Each structure stands twice: as structure tokens, then as C-alpha cells.
Length: 226
Image (cartoon, one colour):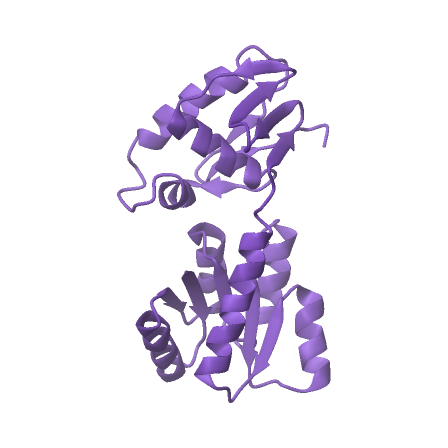
């Protein structure tokens, strides 16, 4: 599991990152709200653990802005603000769980694992549809306007990821980590090559262009009719 911790108490964050890594997870840390927000947008994390009181951008604003941008990554608020009104405000802002400080690491880990299970179960769709483009995961088939689209395995996986995140900007880093499963220079042209091939197959012969480039950021798959 890949976890992002946004916490300005460096001593507490160091302990938590170390404990998460010892539990077998990949844990990354931001001690500033704005930095954490940008990392959350770019990183493709499985779960976000966010403190409420942060410099530059507080936790509630981070969650609100993430949800506004279509990011549905599960969020656990970890905060010293533990009154009922505080917890209600966090949940209404879009967090999935709220754990007041002080906390037991075993409980925190269990809550993170529950959020991740929910995320995985939410990815159990067998088909995706964007405009007249359809992907059937069971049949491993792609159609546009009823026409069969033949894709190579990497092109199929790329399209599947884009369709799963339809309407959201997908960064180059997210594609490298989720489609290619490894990290290397995000400036490499391997993404451009595959995007170009995919676009030629799903967009070239159709009136509406679904796969769009967001200059300086990444790509988005969307239909203006939706």
C-alpha cells in the first residue's frame, strides 16, 4: 500500500512513517499543507493520512479541494481536534475516517487497511464507458460507437487506467507508477509514444476527441456530452 502522510509535527511524522514502513507499506511525508496537496494530486496514493492544523493550507481545505478536483483517494484525518463537531466537520468535508490524537498505531493501521479494502472493492467494476467509448474488462474488449478497437496489452492497460479516472487529470508520474509499475524519468517519451498510438486508435476516425492533453500536467479522458 502507498500512503501519504501530511503532518507538520516532524517527530510524530518520523515515527509514523517508520512504523508504516516496518508494517510493509510505502510511506511518504509532507510537512506543509500546500506541498502535501500537490503530492496528493500527483502521486497516485492508496490512502492519505492528513492532519487538520497545517501551515499554508489546512487539512479541511486539502480534502475539499481534492474532492472538488475529482480525487476520491480515501482520507483518514489524524488530528488533536477530537470533539464531535470537529469530527463531523472533517467527515462532511470529504474525509472517510477521523482518528483523534493521541492514538494507538495498531488502530491507525487497522483503519488504513479498512479504507484500502473499501477502495479496492470500489474498483471492482467490470466495464467502463466514456461517451461512446466502452471497455469490457471481462471480455477484455474495447468498442467505440459499436466498432471494435484492437489494442496492444500496454495500450489496453493505459486506456483502462484513463477510463477508471475519466474526467480527472492523470499526470505522467501517475501513468508511470500505475501503468508501467516502476519509477523513472517522467520526461521519457515512452508515455508520449503510447498516448499517440492510443489516440490514433480511439479518436482518429471519430468526431469527438476524448483523449486530451493538459499542457504541462498530463492527460484527461472525457466526453463533453457527459
